Image (cartoon, rainbow, N blue to C red; front, side, top):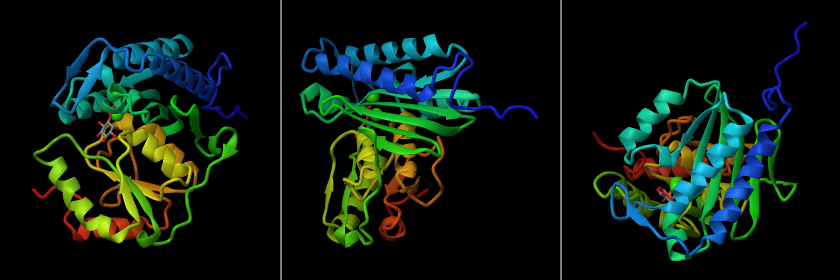
Length: 288
Ligand code: IPD
Ligand code: CA
Ligand code: CA
C-alpha cells in the first residue's frame, strides 16, 4: 500500500511549521528593531490605511525565506496586492486553488507600529488545497509566538492553548476593529458596537486582528468580530482559534473559509448569542 502523504513535511524533510515559526520570529525581531525608525509612510486606499517601507521589507524577508525552502509553493502577501477589497478578492481567487499557499500579513497593526503602540504582529499561514494547516502569529513586543497545526492543537511557549469558558455575553470580554471604509463597513461595525457593548463586560480594539484571534485562542478574550478583513488578517488566527477549541465563522454563521471578510471568532459557547445580537441589530451583513 502506498505511504500516506504527510502534508506537514516537504520532500527535503523540512517541517512547514518550523519554517513558519522561524520566519515569523525573524521578521518580528526585524520589525521590532525598526520601531519608530521607518522613513517612508504612505497612505493606501484611505487616510487610515498606512504602509511603511518596513511592511514591504518584512514581506520581502518572509517571502524570500519561505520560497528558499519551498520554491514550488504559492504565496499571497498583503504588500503584493493592490489596495481595496476588490483587488484582494481577485488576488485570492487567482491563488486559492494552489496545493500549497502561504498567506502572509508582514505587519498586522501598521497604525500601531507607526505610533509606537506595542500591539502588532506578523501573521503567517499555510493552506493546503484551501484549508489552513499551519498558523503562526508572532507578537515581537511581548515575544509571544502563537502556533497551531491542523489536528495537533494550538500552543504558546510550548503549552497548549484553550479558549475561555464564559458561557454568556454578559460575562464576556470581546474585541473588534474599526474598519477604515466609511461608506459600508464602518456603519455596519458601529451598529454592531452599539448593540453588543451594553450586553458584554467590555470591548477592546487593540488594532491587530491577527493578535485578537490569538488572544481568543489563548482564552484572554471571549470573542472577536470585525467587518471587511482580508485573508492575510485571518488565515493564521483562524487555525489558532479552532485548534484551541473555539469557533470561527463569518458574521452570518458560515464556517470559516479563506474568502471570509466579516468574521466572528469566539470560545464557541457565546457564538450563537453574539451572532444573534449582530443579526437583530442589522449588523451581520450589508443591506443590498
Ligand atoms: C489592520 C489591523 C486592524 C484592523 C484593520 C486591518 P493592517 O491590518 O488588523 O486591527 O482593524 O481592519 O486592516 O492594515 O495593520 O495590516
Ligand atoms: Ca492586517
Ligand atoms: Ca499589514
